[in-house]
Amino acid sequence: MKLRVRPHRPRSVHLEAGSALLMAVFVVGSLMMLSVALLATSTSSSREQSANTARQRAFYLAEAGVSEGLTALRAGATGNIGSIATPAYLGTGVFWVEATPSGNETTLLVSAMWGSGRAGLEVVVGEVRSQPFGGMFDAYEDIVIGDEVFIDAFNTWLGPYAPQVVNTENGVDFAHERGRVRSNGDVDIGADTNIIGKARPGPTSSITLGPGAYVSQSTTPLADYIRLIPIEVPTLVSLGPYSVPPGGSRSIPPGSYGFDDFGIGDSGELTIVGPATIVVASYTQGAGGRLLVDATAGPVTIYCTGAFAYDATAEIDTLMGAPLDLAFMCTTTGSIDFAPSTTFRGGLFAPGADLTIGEDSEIFGSIVASRITTGDRARFHFDEHLLTREITSPEDHEIVSWTVVEAAGGQFNALRQDPFELLGLDRGSLPRPSDAWDL
Image (cartoon, rainbow, N blue to C red; front, side, top):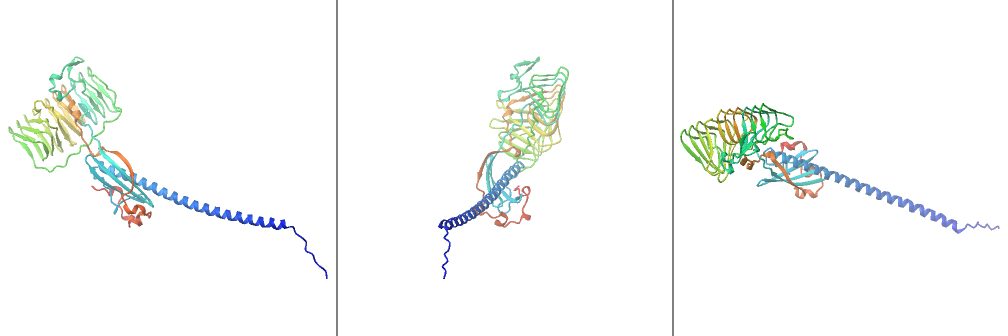
């Protein structure tokens, strides 16, 4: 019997083989763990990116809500847009705006949802007050001034015009050098006319000076067009027609009043005590009719939505010792004509009207119209006290402050479901933003 002896293998060979296998298992395991970690990180990153995209789009929707609410306010609406029950639909998301007025400001709380994203903005919108009167003439189209016309300025706060005439320019006496003339179109100035102040045409228009015409200050075109300030007529219940009988007299105390046709008969006299706001369907002041304004305690504003007729022999005056603070705000788009030799006092703001002033007339105040044409030898004196006049209109709303807040969805803000599923909304039945206004 033969004995077989197995060859001896060094122990190190077994150890090396085991170590290699263990290393391979470790590497493979590490790679698997790294792959799982990378997959988890990628999934988390993708989810975070998706959430960020949803939040960003919700914020863009909220900004659109601010714009829509502001547009609604400027159009005279309340600023409310939709509601959480019936939001406005835009760009596969929804938003709604809650408007809260307080004095001259309105707070817009805008809430928006897009996918899982939620956004809220609180915006305070304020009314910006504008000056309707800034000089003797403002026209949104052309101005044509006749021959031998004179334009300067004075201030009724300082008293009557005549005592303020203490200066001389180009051989003519004048009060103050602020008889400004501005137009968005051309300015045509007749022969031997004196304008003590500026006369400036529109940015792309020109000025023409007749022989001997003189302008004491700038005649260069305006850098920007005159902004059209719309008239916001107060909503007042009409008390019916109002009239002062021929030769009679009446008075209106301070307050706000609405009337239909409004007239001062021939040789009649009407006293209006300010502060007073009066809205009329038409205004007529007959031959020799006199309007006495008592602005001691506040201004008088007459809004005229129709025809404006003022006789050449009519008269407007102020209580002795008080400045004349009277403004006519006319929405007519027709024509307003002053006959030759008319005397008129006050501000006339008629941005849609073509206004003609007859020869030898004299006006103390300010004129704003679409077109202005004057006759020869007319005299105009801008009342600087009218610079204190301010008006607001819906188009003058501007953003005062802007704050990022939580959306007004309450318990829905913590839930990241799609808003249509969360709120039970039907996309096809939701209104567009412009159809969701609360008028």
